Amino acid sequence: MPDHPVRSPLLGLALASLLLLPLPSRGEEATTEAAEAAPPSASGSWFGVRDSLARRGVEVTLILQGDPSANLTGGVRQGTAMRMPLQATLDLDLERLVGWRGAQLHTGVHALEGRNASEHLVGDLQGFDNVDSQRFRQVSELWLEQRLLRDRLRFKLGKADANADFARVFASGEFLNSSAGYSPTIQGFPSYPDPAASVSLFASPTGWLSVGAGVYDGASHEGCHGRTGNRGLGTFFGAPDALFAVGEMGIRYAPGGRPGRLSLGSWRHTGTFEGEGGATRRGTSGFYAVLEQRILQEPGDGSQGLDVFAQLGASDGRWSDVEQHASLGLAATGALPGRNRDVLGLMLTSVVASALCPTASGSRRESVLELYYGVALRPWLMVKPDLQYVRHPGAGAARDALVGTLRVTLAF
Image (cartoon, rainbow, N blue to C red; front, side):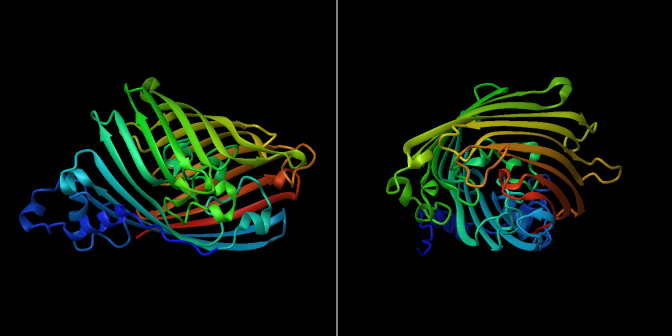
């Protein structure tokens, strides 16, 4: 079925806001030295225009990426694969732009070229590279966020990636394995490459406690005809009739000035799930937990340090291919003297497949050990060699694999 572009009045509002934006005067630019500037990029400040836009609440980013991978041994087959993701975002701070206090409009466009290396080379369940998918070009996100009560209350409406707000592991953001982002036990999670139409509400009644809940279009679980990544609001209100609901509570703390976080979440998908013998059931559910803790920190620089993180996830194995997940990892920034922006990480992640998993055999367990070191050649250029050992890919479907990836990320 052909893809349908997202059509929304929010996109029109974003474009109209840019057209109506007044150009800065020379006097204004001279008095905003301490104001916010655009993040570093290979294209620079566009002769000052980009920084001026940022000071007025308009931020444009373009991320170019290349992920060449080589399966060195085991898996489905030895060989190589190249993936090239592209991400462009437009963020409008509507308070600075038009005086709408506490409001933000976000638009994200994504494209991917290349083969799915997990399917073609390794055959793993967890996805050794988090960009792997089928080729696509789409408006992935288009949402409006409103903050109230001095940011204690936050409301988000539109097409959004659920992993930006739920089941997120902040310390694991540099890992390539998909399980570092969120637990693979979460069925039909509306995240890359299929964000979905949604409505979410978040509250932070104190500085240490936060709670959130969201309802998302769950159509992606129903098959290719219900994909949400390349669609707008249609399947949220119409067929296929499926929703994904999630709630999370988080606790923040800082022993000895080193920040930490514990979050507990529960989810439910209302779609139709198939069990053993062809039996079907309407709806399934599960839970997850995330723990993160800074254990070493560079004095006077909160961006440098060593973090430890752990994940747990569980779902009903009668209706899910993956019923248990656990991970443990370390992530460091500035681990070597004079390399303050370089990143280093080591993680072990393991899943237990259910009897429903078509590739599972024996212990039904797949485990992955991942190691990476990212070299920040420029503030806008990162080169990151990554090596993963996959034991029992597909929970026993293929031989143990050793796969390497060289991720190159350019902020343009």
